[in-house]
Image (cartoon, rainbow, N blue to C red; front, side, top):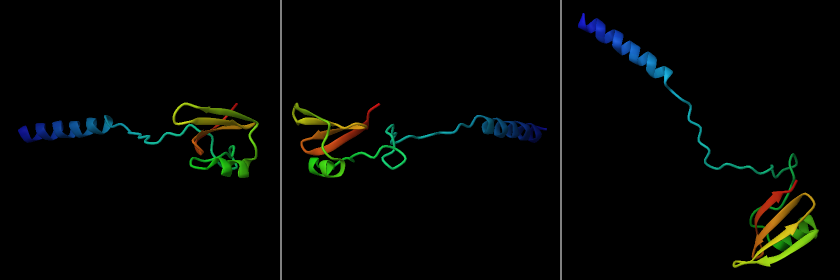
Length: 96
């Protein structure tokens, strides 16, 4: 009788254990940017120099002067803005 009770309890525990499982989703590197490919808006990538950006995308519409230390400069184009630290791209973002 004791073995039968243990078997019933064990089966019940296994059944409830399966019901209590949850899916774990890990987002280690979330990206909220628009795709940098033809389906999105192609824009400069991190590490490009100012010269490379001008060669590939042309002259910016507006150049915001450098501020702070290290100097941060912002170039504004029609569809995106580029943020430089010294002469390297650190961010490029799509503007609405």
